[in-house]
Length: 498
Ligand code: GLN
Image (cartoon, rainbow, N blue to C red; front, top):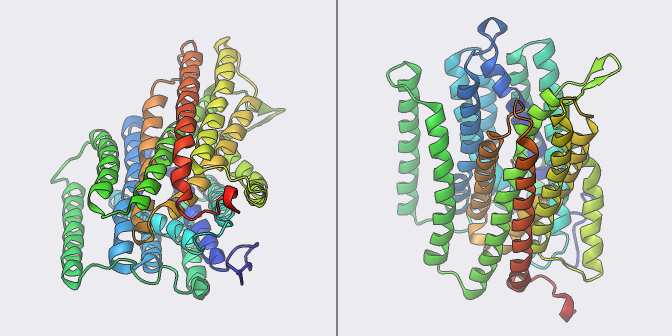
């Protein structure tokens, strides 16, 4: 770490490549996701699919669950077959094709487009996040700040996505909005290609390639899987087979949870870990549990908090009515504004030899997020009187949720990259991305009990969420007192010994 490469805001040049690629990918992802339920429930003569709310939200849940579920095979493919660079590139191409297909108006293309985005994101998302960590040496203390910067790119992308697709949907048409997502991913691919040399050999090859025979078998399985998927898709599209999205959504959720635990335990049992590696992965497990609980609260942004904004918040400012969707942008906006402070804070704390552990930061993030629900407790009490409440409540909630997110989410990515052995960097990021999948599902289940029609039971529900979040946060904090010693084995400069 002598001759440090500081060329991108004090971070290695390769971060520029990954920052902008992920920014554009997230622009396309969130831009499209914001429209999804609206499009599916809109009437046919308005250009929508006219599905029921139950079917549309189930498909939405299935889609978001599947996107993050496929991160596990995506990470594995990078580790054992093609390396992170190629996985990111081909993943991006598949995503772009998905959005192009979505831009063609028809039911068949709609579902085919979603499947392509799922497959492509599974390849891209965990691997691009793992590549970020590989820009740093073991002892490089810029890692947390680097991930915070990268995370800011994610949110710049989502903000652009919401603004552009929201505008196009209102003023031009659904399919132009979907097309805009394709254009965003195209920009991402172009800039990735052009700035690829900055990554040097990071992720250029699979860190632990399979034997040629193993590779052949794996490719065969992948091709068979795609053929089977194509077969099921054709059967459903032609009406030869019917599926119930609600039932499948529940099964995928359960599968994600089981896969998460089984995979993690499997790694301990079968990966020939050294003692130190096992301890680091133990410390990481704690961060993953905190992450699941965190997203279970946070991801209500799109559901229960969104409904609170729509039905129980006084959105009139003079004669202008604030669109409900604008509240979703508060998170990205706060995140972009606060990121530089957090990045500077992590660097400063390290300089002063104060190095809060990953476990501690996750606990803090969880507790701050939960405290946002105290605000919801008060807001829903106010709403129970029958009067619509001030938008400031939700502004305060999103502020606290974003501060919690900054303590936990970028830090957890950093933890994965640091605590997982490099030969399984992609897979472990895939396992981590499963925590998004499980968290979002739990958020959906919780939100099902938070119907704006039932304002009387709402304050109690929000209080329970608060207590649960704070409770888990305290337990994580206590366990972190132990796991912080395991984290240090990862080669972190140890304050006591400098
Ligand atoms: N906003 C973050 C991202 O897109 C986290 C996603 C999530 O749902 N957990 O990377």
